[in-house]
Length: 323
Image (cartoon, rainbow, N blue to C red):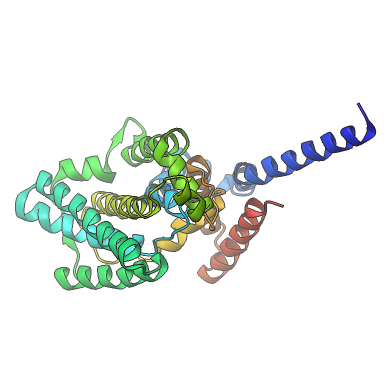
């Protein structure tokens, strides 16, 4: 082997090492933050099983929406309406359960997600409005409709079966919310990495023109991921309603930023072409971990915002750099 060949091999190994290190920074960071909080907050109940399970409960809805957001971002699009759609769905489900029972309520919740997704998808793919603007407008529409139909008041849910199944129940010590997150995470990972649909999503985000030349209907892919995102947001709204036993327009407010941050923090590219569902779930859990730890530290809300923002920016900067 020549000197040049050896040099090239070392360079290649170094490049792969850097890429793998950056793509795995979320896992390294999660473990590091967990250890730091475990040591510094051991006397404040951080490691108490109840506290750890609460982190999962508080994070599950973000993770559910972030799984779908991984597909949207990987496709080169974005959805800013997820938080508002979650709030709207919580209200429509609560009202429907009151009017027609649990099954009717679940059906209305699913229909809400599909209707919003179709609207977003058609405006983006058929009219050509960028998804950023389409979903930004939908954010306001969904919140306005939720406020209007609920008269800005909470709508109670008195159906115990619904509350158990969608957020409030546990199987042993395992929260139902954790099961929802795990099952959807497995389905999302398999779909993105192991199916033709997932490969077409990544190809569309990696280079739309090239994807079209290879026979992929990129508009159809974009339409499907936007519908998927809205349906995931609707499910999150149903989980919010079940956990809190009521529908409120405020539920999900501001979640779109946490959802996008979780996906990007996990390694999904904002520019399309690459996504990881497992990383996204860890990213969502990491955000929940940081929120919980900063609260236990006794920081003021303004200080929590500064610390949380700084940690997320650092982690995203490290995980997103590819060169």
